[in-house]
Image (cartoon, rainbow, N blue to C red; front, side, top):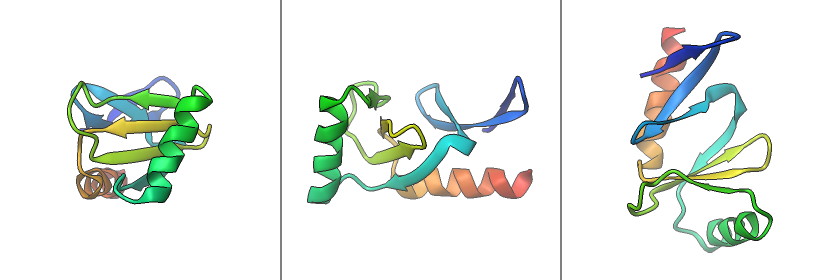
Length: 90
């Protein structure tokens, strides 16, 4: 599931053909709490919101070191397992 790109950066599959550079990920969280909803609105207002859900229900938020917020349709637990599994294989 991980891919190597120029400069030996590893990518994490966040669903539907979308990938993020693993080293840039700060947190993977569930979007259900009110503080997370506010985080989403703040990111949208400041142009830092990236929607990778392909029109499906948002199931996780991925916060990047650039303060961008990425929406994913994959459960946060599934993304965590992918992230940890790929790290163990390195």
